[in-house]
Image 1 (tube, rainbow over the protein chains, first blue to last red):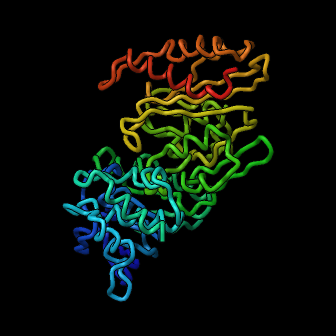
Image 2: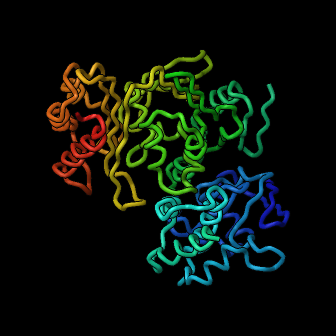
Image 3: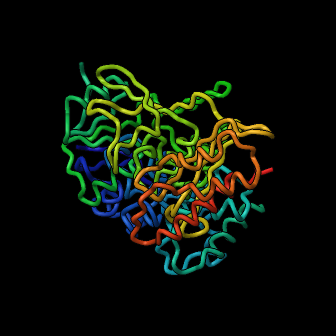
Length: 151
Length: 279
């Protein structure tokens, strides 16, 4: 079937199979680099995108279900070519080492700050509970998010 | 009747259409709410559906609280649930325990009822609230107590043409709580969970419900512990006696955790759950 949706600000179309996941369509069909495969079962968060503003595991989302919706990856956060605040904060705080978890982390961070402008450490760790990072030990990621809360 | 689908993908807008579709399309159909279970089944080659029915457009995402009566639509996500301040305590605690913003946006109450351990935290909490599963099929609607909903591992009291449309608690108990233990502090699968629902005053526990998750495929009611509690005074001694009975009569066969550990764990979780009411 043919699906039409908005991806990082662009109107896109793709022919998808009934059982295709959104992850597969983004990665294989549309060549998107800002989602990564980590587990395929909604545990690691490397595949996370925003669907109509809400964070979702793209590996657990059917492509068919995003027809008519707005999908945002971390690459779609830039405003007028400039890095978004959350991206700048990640850079400033060394919150990415290998970068594999980063696209998912950034989107969940953004979703958290959209809902809660002044999260506690506990609230940040709880929000990120579905995102695994093997490099940073999480602290710089949490610091990056906290730095935006203080402003 | 006209329900449009595209290459086998259906997004019915009315519950009656969804039921009819499920009946017509039969066994080779996958029903999807949030997808946390259904899409995993696809990814792991455990199902090969010829049609998929998505429940996302059905008007069964709601939370209705009227006094001590609560009804929650089956496709209500955990994220939506958490927007309500007046949930029964055990349910609120179970919802907050579900890990991460992305999972909360996909996990639904109905899906959680069907999910096998280590998932099913909401089911564990709802079982201690004496919840009923509201089903609708081509022959009409019926309510099944959650404690009678599970017939075996992944076997439910649900007919081929039925869908879960809501879960209902007729009377929220005076006190309820939910405690769970996971592999990591902020994430990881549930190892075990305990939910408690009590009606009590300073002298007597009039009604007690205790449910346990994680030790068996689906949550169970710890009736031995409930018998210890009912009619007794809410003293530390009563609760500690009940704690010893929380895993009674259950055959525990876990590949990762020893039986002794799990029995000890659920006792400890029960004590934590009732901490506030121990006089």
